[in-house]
Image (cartoon, rainbow over all chains, first blue to last red; front, side, top):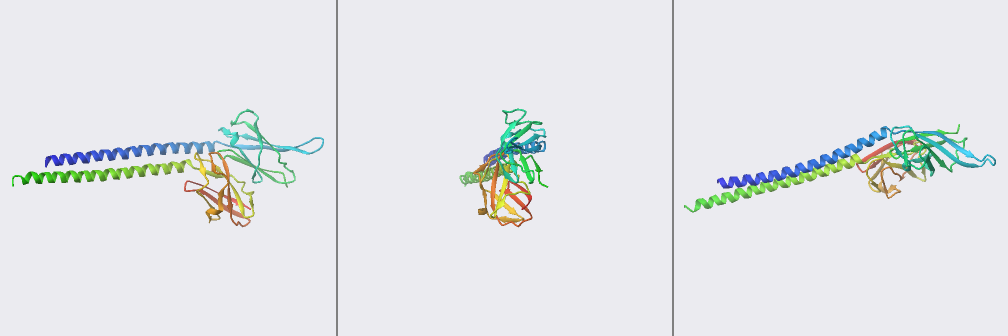
Length: 152
Length: 144
């Protein structure tokens, strides 16, 4: 009788230990992955809250002699306190994406668009002063600015 | 009579050990299922927290022609989004899967893609809600 109780208790104890170990390990792993994800989400949200950009100028340039359209330039400043990636910046004109060439006037060869730095976007789209043109610049994290130019 | 007592003891002992083993095995099996569920749940939660989208269209100049609406979706999360799992509601009405197509194969974090939605939309103010599975969503009021 004594042996059977001892062996049964030993079996149950071993099973309890194994079960506890499995649940504890899973819980630890889950907790860790949850914390990491939460941290990255908070970082992302903070990054977005601290990001801002402002369209300063939208101008079309014309040849002095012929009066023909040459190019348009959009000047945008990173007015937030986070750095943005230049290659992730998108330009919408009247709701449609437009290709452009871009240069960071403060660091011409860099992809980093630091706080306070100014980007100059050059494109072949003519902003007719008589028509309303809506320009929206969007950074990779979702920060954006929208300005309306021209028209009545 | 003398030999029957130890035999019954042995039978009881074996029965007790078998019962204990069965209970132990059940405990381990329950713990295994529980730990699997915990990990699965946390993976799901992590995926939700890492996934985020933003509609970046100009709300008064959303491209719409021939019944086709171009919705620009920014992957503002930390995971890659693929072409499936997109759900679109316009003015609260679900647009069927076949009428919603991401033009890109997938969207890396920071990338913008075009979600082409074939739907009949009345001119004036409308509302669109885009969901990526049950992980992320964004909505926007727009005018056509």
